[in-house]
Image 1: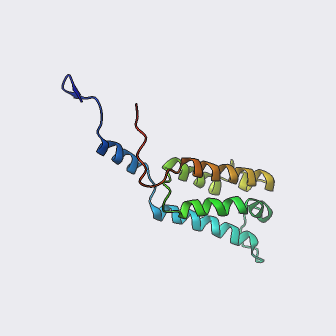
Image 2: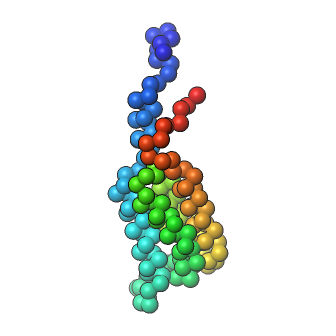
Amino acid sequence: MFVNNEITERGQLHRLLDHANDEVTMGERIKWAHSIDGAIRAAAGPAVPFRRVARPVVVLGAAPALVAVAAELRNEDIVVSHEAIEAVRAFMTDGVDSPLYGGDPLAARRGADLLRRRLAAGGAPRGAPAPSAA
């Protein structure tokens, strides 16, 4: 463990703390899940808001995958990293690069499905051992 008075390997506590620092709070996850729900509700609603940026047909085209993303965010048994929540934020708010703000419902659905797969792949079960850096 010690070589030349230096710690060469971090212990299990350090690995656990590093892993915990990479997690996103449940409050932040719920906030983004509500944002997804609100976007779908606004797109499905009959009233036209004063200022609508995303086209309703595009949002509704991506709705099945977006509902799955919101469900992943609400799942307390899955760990969500900051990178994954940043991907959600970019998909939901980036009017330039996000397919949600384009005119193609299929592209938006593919983008939302990719986001769903990213959350599912990156979300390790809570309590699982942290991957060790070898």
